[in-house]
Figure (cartoon, rainbow, N blue to C red):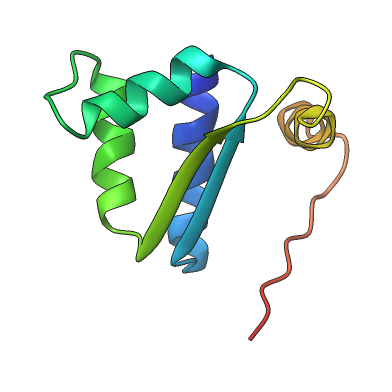
Length: 93
């Protein structure tokens, strides 16, 4: 589920024209898989697609955060997936 959420987010960010991406997740295994897959070929189709999209970004970084730190992000993701509320993203120009 985590990989699919990252993929969906990257598709949106690419569509909106963002060229800097910071991925934060409380799933350490996801961080390791994406980082290690840069050096070797990924077994997962989802991971390969994520890496393809990340190559199109000017700068990106993935980092592990504690579950506590990730609460806000989890809440935003839940709102977006439930589609109960609109989420506005502002880009500084």
